[in-house]
Length: 368
Length: 233
Picture 1 (cartoon, rainbow over the protein chains, first blue to last red):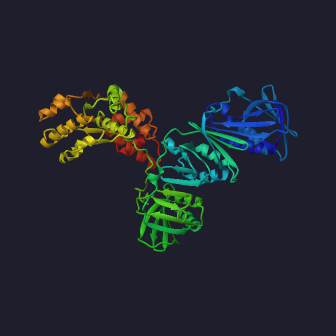
Picture 2: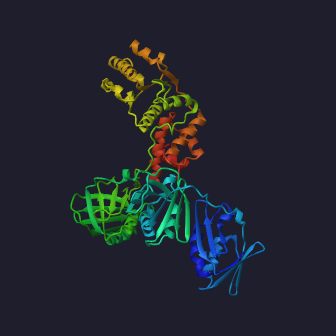
Picture 3: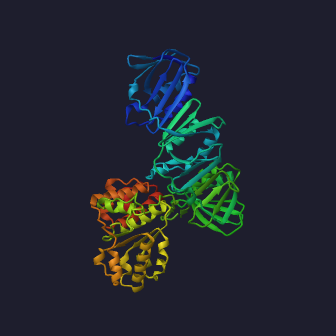
């Protein structure tokens, strides 16, 4: 194998593909990136952790000998990043080692056999559909923060992707809060599909998507989902299991509804949170006619209190929340104002755009 | 903030209804088979299940009703341990249903109106070709039935002794129930719960429900110290 490629042509696909590669691996070859070069000057880069696989395609400037090799992904990326702009890179396989030359630099990298590099089984794709990349990105960005990190329930460590006729929906929850976002889309899916994409797959997929109207093609299989966007092919295993019924969790009939300026409320909460208990991050909200008082204190007996004007007329309510959960929602709501619906100190709060929008956020209170 | 501060969990845990999918048959495979096929054309019209406390009789009766519902058949589960102090009006026109599951028959034995009501319900169900399941803590002939006609009817069907799971079976059953809830229950923790917890599987499953909620609230894994703390052991 011998080819040349410009640093710029290699860097973006390499950075995305290397993102899939885990730092700690059980199998040595999984820390490598697979590089395949063909006569048509196509270069394909593949990274995998057995759950998520990403293939990025780019063009070589010259191919002397097509072939394939696997080299350590992070080291290759760090080298490419630190080479000067517009540098031309010359790759060659010499005596089982990969030699990378550029200008007056030379790097010799270890390789592992291409045959050892695992590829995710090409599953039977039953349904194929296209969405604007921007739509899918928006759906993921609106909900991804609520996914669980390492919950004992495997189905919470991911995102529900629901596809049905003319509608796409994402749902994520960590058991304390839940985010749902629905968007109309020009798709026909019968019967409706519900997939749970694991957390890592969701985060990597979001990195691939830009906000454009260009299509992303999704292939839905029984155990995998595949996404094609121009130069990238992303495959993720699915979480086997059922996702909680989000309809059961979204509160209905809360009678205390107030409107606040989103940015102002977020600032008030961030400031107050400085003096909240570092572990629980609890803040107390006191909702009164036209005013919301936010209070926090910590084990050192330090206290913060802020007042913010809200549109509200009704009974007084005092309720506690993990301030981080409220701030996460306020960072995401796509409006200048936010509407919050409460009923009592033990029931969940509903946050959304005034009058309701694409996204709904449910946050459970804390007992303070 | 007081030390009792706690994040309340959302109701996103999985429901663990009693179904055939989360019943570990153990030595009861023939019984489960008979229950699963009872609604088929050649299914048994009447099954009687007997066995000790906590062997899974209620689970099986509820599972049969859920399975009937999945087949768009109408089923009714009657737990007599909760209904015995009502008059037996609920047995009227019961033959309009496809399947009736009567749990804990012993709770109404010796009560004249109930025994008569059950006798007539039995006859009407049989005439209408509908299915009946009855559970009791002892074999039909050992039950203290006052009405001789009812006593004889109880021996008409197919009778099964529900057998208790052995320790390995109980371990497997507990892990299965945890899995249905989406929880990973390590072997050593499951063994600890079985060793320290209640004898009956039903009560163990209630303990799992408590653990489910507690781990959702605390976002903790199921370790022995966490189980001790959550269940107050």
